[in-house]
Amino acid sequence: MRTRIAVAAFALLLSLSACGANDDPLSKDTTTGSSSAPGSITIGSANFAESELLGEIYAQALEAKGVTVKRQFNIGARELYLKALQDGSIDLLPEYNGALLSALAKGGAPAGVSKPEDVLTELKKVLPSGTEVLEQSAAEDKDTLTVTAATAAKYNLKSIADLTPVASKLSIGAGPEWQERYQGLKGLKELYNIQFKTFKPLDAGGPLTVNALVKGQIDVGNIFSTDSSIATNKFVVLDDPKNLYLAENILPLIRTAANSPTVSGALNAVSAKLTTENLTTYLAKVQVDKQDTAAVAKAFLTENGLA
Image 1: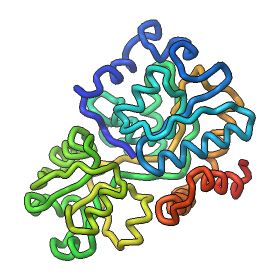
Image 2: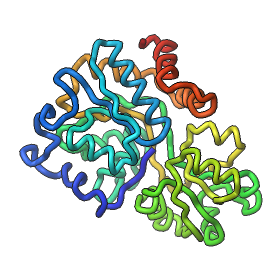
Image 3: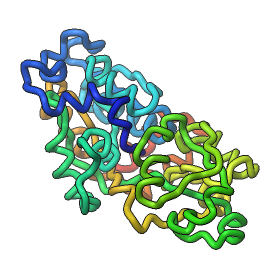
């Protein structure tokens, strides 16, 4: 989920990937300043339903292996939860390989890097000292630019590139941080020469953005590709011919000091079972059926033999 953060807004974290272990807070003993007691793990999540569901799946998978887990979900956007990982407030969270690479790599993801394994290789080169990623899943969830069927027909929209001549007439809605992210307004301007008439700060692919699109309060919405609202409302997801959005495979990001064979074994087993299709199905149980997130996570783990 998931995009490049403006360098100025995120200079501190970016600098961690370049500094030595002795200078990097992430390389230090994580029991200092951490909210986790020895032998426990604090799991965080971003401020959208999918991230919280994934965090809960991780939590219950670890608890099934006897790991003590603390939950600190719904922290906020990437700018906030990576700082929480940096200062030891959390030890683990679900991430997206392409978005994390774009956030950490100086100048953004290297040109031509878009496939999952290539993204993962580059990501490992820029992870801050003291952190690591575990095995990535086949499940992928990308940012999209999405419109209603009526808007697509009116402006003959099939790809993001088709927005270039008409965007000055249109409004777009997304999370407030999208204004400063490369995989938001900045990248759209640089890659596609797109400038919208207005930007409305709403939420990160959540109900505010979806409802605004349905009600015609915005013309284009930033909605995540696994969101059930796309099919429910017959929205049109615009193609991305210039690959503004990289592969976005889900994987655990963890402080190295919090990892162990038990932890990595449990989380890698989750990644092995997680697919785009089953994630979409279980996320719909939370978003559409309004089922409890913990109950949905338990059902996923039980169905996949991980409970």
